[in-house]
Length: 124
Image 1 (spheres, rainbow, N blue to C red):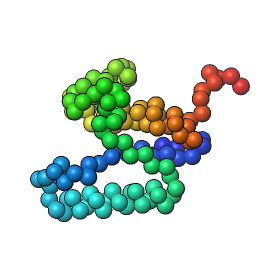
Image 2: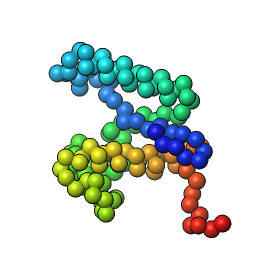
Image 3: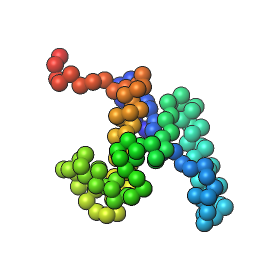
Image 4: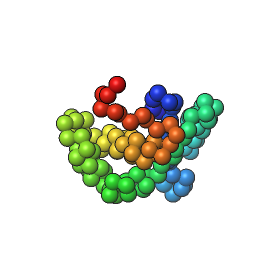
């Protein structure tokens, strides 16, 4: 979730409803994931927080990416070259989270009435 002066917005990676992608997972694991996901959605809805589900294909297409996680890490390094958060190969998940947040700021919030106020360059 992201707090800003005009309210709260939530962006989540949309999970796949396709059972084929859950093959190999235990029934208990799938049930627990579904219960936790439903509880989170319920809390967000109860608090009237705008929720934007974004599929991985959509935000990755926005950045010209595919399923290759190393390419996602490389793109994050392009956006944030001074950051040390993406230096290791295993930082691909962190890189994808940062790219998803950037997608939310660029695309979702820019079209939302809750959009962040524009910086006026310090003019008072």
